Length: 131
Image (cartoon, rainbow, N blue to C red; front, side, top):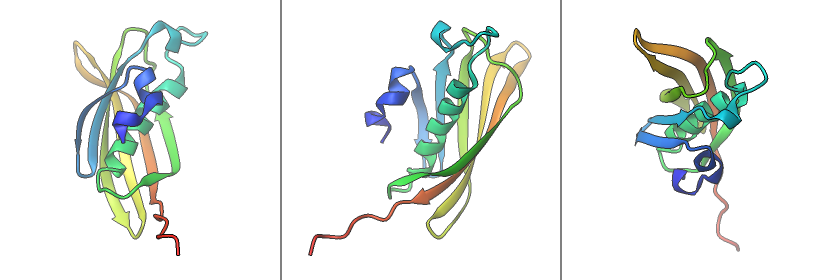
């Protein structure tokens, strides 16, 4: 799925790791991603988290989409930051799933959380054969 995700790739998002129910993606904050406050626009942080979420919830095979998502911004990201989003499956039930994503950046003091994201997934029914 990520191989044909042109939106994520256009922003320089890299898929670092993907396994069943888990994914790690990263993105460098570029000048074009900075808003009028000279910090990363929240939409880009959301998009990075959403990409990791998408890779994690699609790791099981069936086509899965977001049913809902929310994000809490904890700290501002700045131009030049390398942001890392780590997505982990919390539970699945029927065609639904819940995933948590932590977005952080590395500092001299260690990892600093930039945002926490929770995504709700839904497996899309595959169309049956034409009859």
